[in-house]
Image (cartoon, rainbow, N blue to C red; front, side, top):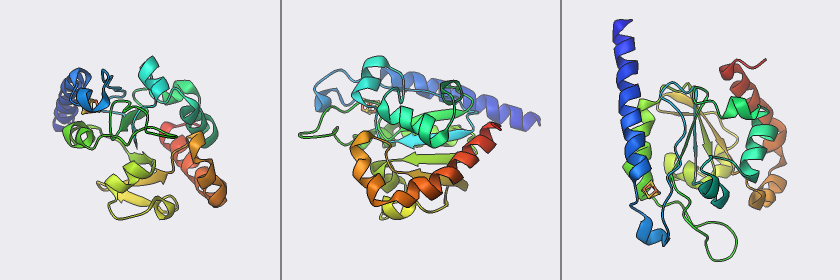
Length: 205
Ligand code: SF4
């Protein structure tokens, strides 16, 4: 028991220290062409570690993760939980491949998340969070964590990551409407299953 407490305290201290370093990070300033704003949310004892791609412009402007149309679909339609249950640091550790909004790409959508961020920060955060499951969001994050595999298959499979259950979701962005139309079974079959798992882990009846 004492060993468990000491490990938890150690993880807490290391993660708080790491988050303070992430908050100061400006590595991508020249690539972005504007001031990066790292978004950080969650604690070492979060039950679910959610890993997505990168914050949107709205998140960059407000500083609150998933505070946009994608987040509303994720929380309300897919997880079917309250904002209070989502923005609870003991429930979700809200991480992403890149902590900062990367700017607009030519045409629709945002630039790809800079790969350097995961090496620099995410892979150091992951072992410090004592999550029960992972939820991976979007094709870039899925391809990074499951190299060589496609989200069209991953989204329909129960997988493992670091020895824990992992569920892979397509990005809930309105720009992804075609994917939802092409794969209607995802929302019909997979979402109820993932929703049930989220409720079970968070103790929502
Ligand atoms: S995206 Fe990551 S590596 Fe780049 S500035 Fe933000 S925190 Fe630093």
